[in-house]
Length: 99
Image 1 (cartoon, rainbow, N blue to C red):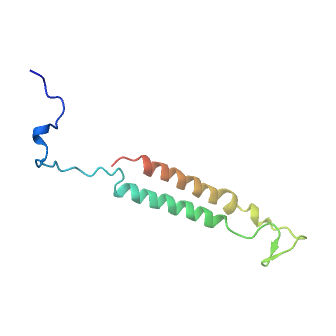
Image 2 (cartoon, helix red, strand yellow; image 1 turned 120 degrees about the vertical axis):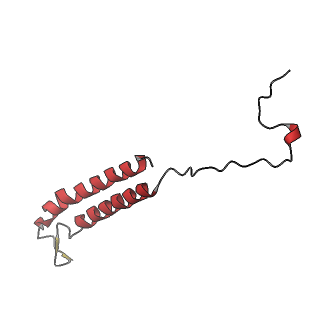
Image 3 (cartoon, one colour; image 1 turned 90 degrees about the vertical axis):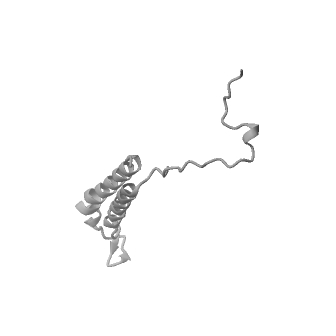
C-alpha cells in the first residue's frame, strides 16, 4: 500500500473543500500605526524647528555684509535634530513592535 502524501487527489477534484477561516495575518496593529504617527509627528516638528532665515538674511532680504547669529541657536542646533532622531527611533520601534 502506498501512503498518500499530498492532500489533493484526483478523486477530490471539483469537490467543494471546506475553507478554514484565516486569522488576520497583517503584521501591523493599531498600536503600530499609533506609534508610527507619533514618530512622524516628532520628525515633522524637528524639521519645523530647524526652519528660519539663513546666515546672510536680514529682514527677509539677502545682505552679504551682515551675519545672522540665529543659525547657531540652541533650537536649531540641539533641540530640532534631537526631535528628528527621536522620531526616527520611534519609527523603528513602531515597525519592530509585535501585536
